[in-house]
Image 1: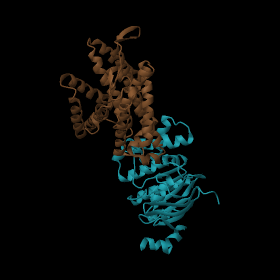
Image 2: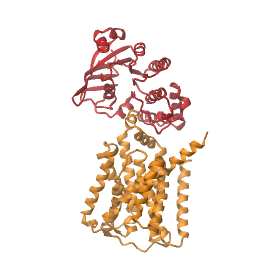
Image 3: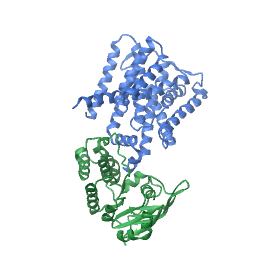
Image 4: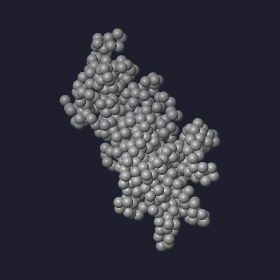
Length: 244
Length: 317
């Protein structure tokens, strides 16, 4: 087996007396499409935050692309190729939509390659990413002029603009219509085709099932299932967690 | 506008200001103008941290006073020309700004503001108890009447005015350059959302340290010539509430989003204060600032610049 791109070993996180993550082990292979599901409060977002450095795990370690991530601040992880979208969109409110995408290009991409993008190159890349999520006609608008759906697309586009090796999409489809979900799924598949590894966190089961090659289920901070999506959903423990 | 054009234009405006001030036969215009220019530097410096990054600094007076007291120290220990003292004042305050940033930047919002206020109190206590620079008695700086400049003798106050004018021009050029650079983008993301900034690869802590250092250094530079201006420096005047309040109020009234806000705010408020000092009393200054600040927070929370932008947007169909 090839070296995993992401290797999570015994990661635990507590908030006071509450155990949010309890010894999670997970490996993600390069180019894989992984679905991560679990009921509300099961620790999905906490896991993402520990992977990306927004939170620091007390125990265990995260290895990405052969490098130990423990203790690295979030921005360095982004530079190394780990990008995420936030569950609730967090756009830069005072910047235009195009400028929002300029930030990861100016910081993450530049710090990685060390090369300086010219002003026209920057503009072109911004337009390219906006076109990918069909927001190019709103480039000059402020985030507050966008709809909730467009805001989610912007969130995804900003993560893409960091040109990651691993993209973690944290509920990018919540509240979207059926056709919009199709659009985003198509986009994620296309990105995966370009070689980007993707972890999809989602509540919409039809989307997760059609997207994922492998499915991981978290319940109360523990991993209870990991494997072929069709088999995982038939797992009695998973059924119990979802249906009671 | 190209950066080079802007720099040239700023220097031209500064030169025009100096020439216009010389046309007035009364030396008082230099005294009053110096104060306004000093506030342009302070307001611009405050805005680099407060406006661009969104971190409110209540300790501006401390950085200003550090610049002033480093001048007093060197005046006694190792006399130097004022331009050199300005550089030293900038270094001292810049280093303290860096240190303050390192200790406090993990705090957000009002906690950071309280920490900066505490810094001002601590520094003032240190200065009051440091006898070499005058302690609570204060220190006298003997200002020569004239100085040889560009081949002729000019009144010393004209020289100080010219120095502060240059400093104001430099501060504005620095602020505008930052605003349009990669650094400026990074600062804006810190103001908007630090978590998202980190996720986009912005090294937020490093950028905040750069902002506190630049901001502190500029404030120290504004304070360095002050002992020569005032002639007698005591802790109460160097750490005066006026500096802290004005450095916040001027950008707020002008608008914090761009370099022009603090400039407009400082000219407007600074001039009103100078006029009030002469016509009413200097004690009324803080009242004017207070009333204006309350008015602006209610009527134009984005300052004059924001107000004009809103009106222009509304004018457009």
